[in-house]
Image (cartoon, rainbow, N blue to C red; front, side, top):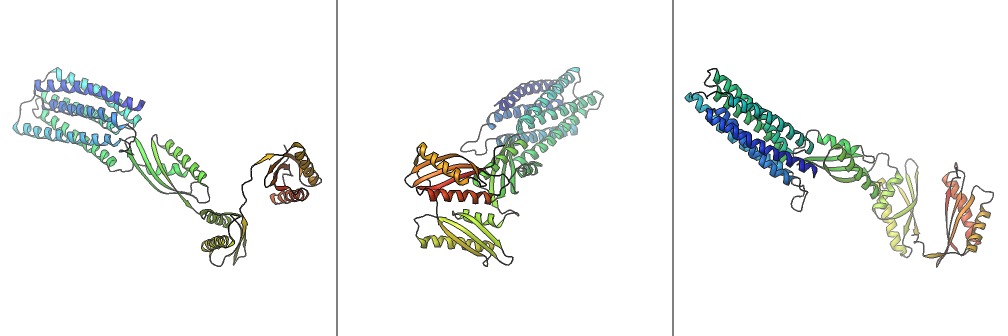
Length: 457
């Protein structure tokens, strides 16, 4: 809201300045008969109209997007700038016609006094001040309407200087000086209108700002996890930079990781552009370093299948794949076999028909049933047994033993420690041996869940 307050405040002050100076120049111009001064007064009058339009537009352009304006109201500033440009060309044409008429007919020069020079010097100082204030506000708020208004007042300075030159020529006896100065003012107005029209039309036709595409692409590519930016489009609506991007991400990443990449990309773009709105479309693609196991896991994930223990043997001329496929324990064998065959065909489509695929069908592990904690004596008994089975081996320090009674049987959880340099497979073998001994000694134990960790530092 502070940006909008700055814009409206500067525009409101500019209205008062425009009105006062336009009136002063017009009155003096009529009094001394100076076409150049009257032309500059009319130019200032157009600036007054432009400033009033700007003041009204900036109060609306900062409104947020709604159901009818999905990209906000920022383009109202561009439309207002285009309308002001049209007014400038009408004014420039009228001044040129009148200048030509006076030069052809040899109209007497204006009456020269100190008054018009004083008015013009004051006008130059006022215009320099408000052009600077408007330019600063336009830069801070990225307002196209305020930038156009600042350009108006900067041109007024040049126009006033041209009028002074014309009056000086007239004072030295060059009768055509005033009409020539008016024509110069008209030319400057036309050039100003051309510059404004070019910038405004570029915005209205959604021309990408200079260097914005490269800047946005670099910001997104800097985000970890982004493989490449496939397509990126940029357009300005008011002060907001709207960016539509299609970004390649690894297909092996889970959804929450892709969402994290999207959030990081939005942060990177917001840092590169003060006010940005990013549309991020993720396209999963295969990476160059993707392994055979990665590709198989993607195939299973895309099919909604639970697999584990994927073993790949590359024999050079032939690829052999073994997979454990988990299905509903109550599913009929025929249905489970069809699922396994479908998975095999999908893998062969990915790697070639000569790949050998063996799928081992397993019942899907059910969720652990609800239970209650066993009594202390039972926990102590099982903890003692675990400590005994681990004695003298690679596994030690059995701790955090928990036992839960369920309808399916007892569920045992425990933590243990092992040598940090041991491989995962070795740790698993030793722990698995302890678990098997516990189930043999306590037939009521349905499942044993262990957690191995390195010794305390």
